[in-house]
Length: 168
Image 1 (cartoon, rainbow, N blue to C red):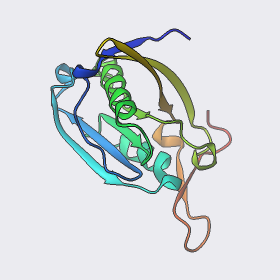
Image 2: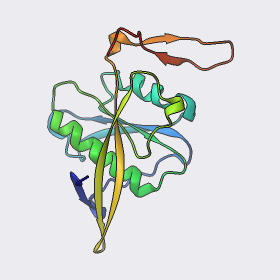
Image 3: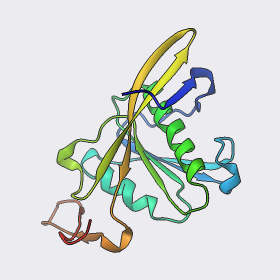
């Protein structure tokens, strides 16, 4: 697979994710600001792995959430920065069509990925002091909000996402 994305390590965002499983949500100042510099806020929150994909999808439905990234506690910082950079570029390329982008620096565990969710692998090459390091990052695709149901599966369990079998 040929790398579609290539970045210089010095051009990657310099955020530091939470040192646990969680989400980073980016809000941009407008469609013209999707150059990575137009971010007006980023929120970092801890989220348990077993609900992280569903939580990222739900948060991406908020009008103000332009980019949501899953971060696992064991993910190398460079991989998270690469996933964020690809997410910013994807959001910028999609412009004002209302598309939200959900990214992950490590492939989400299939056991905690809701039905109907699909993944696209993006190959990224990061140049750092003459050394090029490849990374795979994942874009998470999901059924539109109208097809999503929230149901409690049993007392004490967290909410799980379910999609009707007729959707998608």
